[in-house]
Length: 288
Image 1 (cartoon, helix red, strand yellow):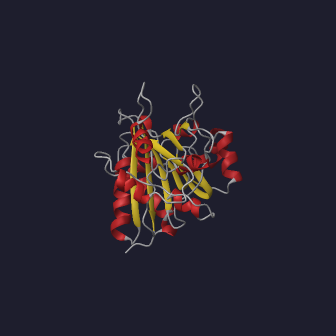
Image 2 (tube, rainbow, N blue to C red):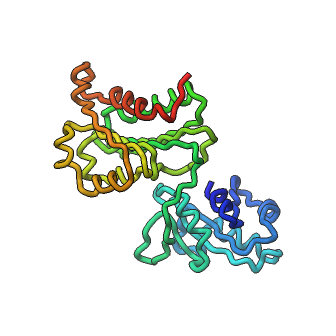
Image 3 (cartoon, rainbow, N blue to C red):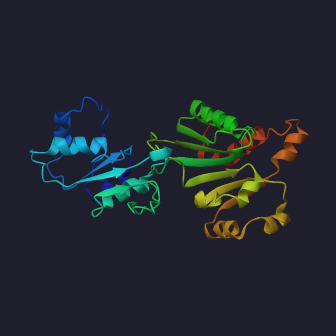
């Protein structure tokens, strides 16, 4: 996805994915490297303390030795350690890097200073709609979003994708649901960072996490809270109000807990907020 995005600007970059690591096929590697290659960066998702280099990097260097690519500089980098997310901005930084022959992406390395500076870029298809939901473990947010993405996938002609991020506590912990749907196949293998729709299902999170800042310009923000319109001014952090104003965010509030009690849901506000999501996202969807 990132390679296609960069090449649209006139650059000439590419990626080789190793699907079978052992036995390592030198012949297949040499066959797919283009004659015009000027630099190669090898990304390993591992760290070998005390080793000369990371496994894939060492194999690539050995495979290129005494071939027509023997003088091509080979950089080595690490990514995705400790399940860190790998974003298009990080991959673009790898292509932009021409100085650090050893580097890392995904973390701020203030010890060895091997991190590459990354920018936040949007490489997804223009037709893809992304949504992000912040919930409290056991409030039903994850279950509702699983159902939502199934509904969209089964009753529209959209491609869909969902990923659910929560800590080991689950009940009582923070849950974040990442949903995507669109008219083209979705190749985004990373978390949603720039969303068209963000929902906060727990009002206490609005002061703890920078969630509104995940919205694209003109996006939609839904806040589940007990505050009325007059109380919002006193309770919303200044940074949230500033971002909403400067980025033309469509802002909605709903008291899901009150509505849930009225209809007998006993704290399970997921159905109420799921309905609100479908109402606000109706412009992106066409149900059959």
